[in-house]
Amino acid sequence: MKYSYQAEKLSLARSSLMLPHTSGLAQSISSAFQACSLGFKDLDETGLDADARRWVATIKSLMETTGIKDPAGVGTFELKARTLSTDQQSDLSRAVDELAHWFRRESWGIR
Image (tube, rainbow, N blue to C red; front, side, top):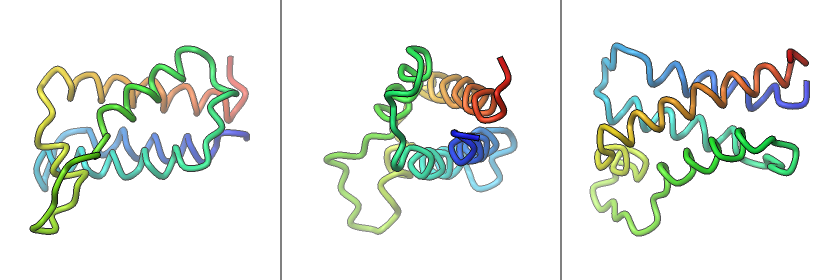
């Protein structure tokens, strides 16, 4: 169960992105970013295949908050989420879904 923690966190991220967004879309995306951040902490990417590395890179680039100012204390992930285009939201959703499946398959040895 090498990737069970990542499977759990990416599954949580995927759930955050599902409808309905009772607290708003930006908050749902922010929650997904937080779950992904936890899932990527201490992740050794050398064991990932090319697809998984690409999905990780996509998610990391979409959740990048460098340069975002948060004087009101809203949270940089939520502020970043508010800036995502519809295409970027779709890319995030697709990458999270695919990576959640990949980690699940790998953690259970499903091929």
